Image 1 (spheres, rainbow, N blue to C red):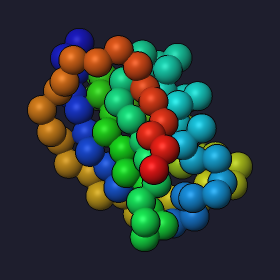
Image 2 (cartoon, helix red, strand yellow; image 1 turned 90 degrees about the vertical axis):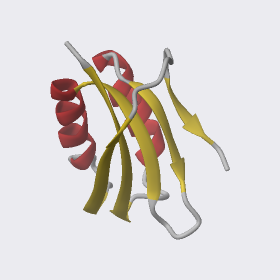
Image 3 (cartoon, rainbow, N blue to C red; image 1 turned 120 degrees about the vertical axis):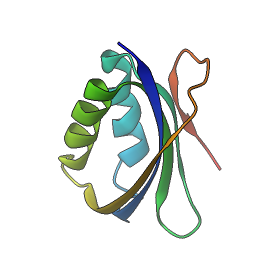
Image 4 (cartoon, one colour; image 1 turned 90 degrees about the horizontal axis):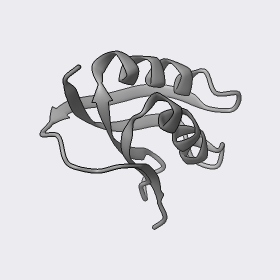
Length: 91
């Protein structure tokens, strides 16, 4: 399967609700790599890489988090990178 990499900004109730932890928890078993971090404006930025089907599963599960409420996602495809984990970036 071909890997794709997506840059995503999440808007809604996505900070202070375990979003970054949940993203790491859900991404790793699917074999996805990338990173996630909070932004100053209350949104969350992410780059996620892997097979498109797994990314779609991941995004669906992430939006169904207990306290997470995603109102909007801005998604664009970007070039793939060499990496081996999905990590949380602390600002």
